[in-house]
Image (cartoon, rainbow, N blue to C red; front, side, top):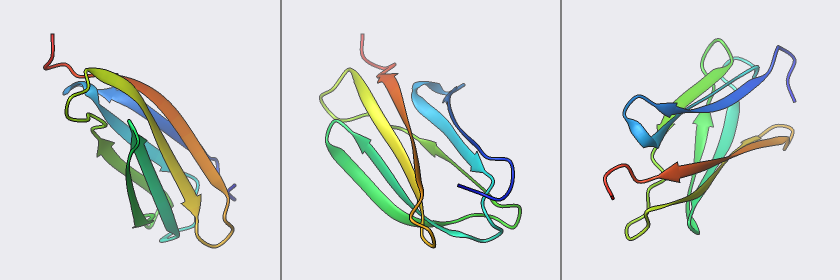
Length: 97
């Protein structure tokens, strides 16, 4: 998918089990990407730009009103080539007993 060493990870944030730190690297500097975040059939899509080092990172809170937990999918697609990568994460709403 990339010319450099590629890495894609989602880690549970110190903020709780319902927040993930997501990062990828190995893209071209300032490369255009598309993101697709899905949790309990709710979807957020947006265009992103990798930074000057070919990396991208964000925080993702997949919580859905009325749900105590679930599965979230995080997908990234390269605009130029259409190559895609995704990660599936289980989450728990830390605020709900």
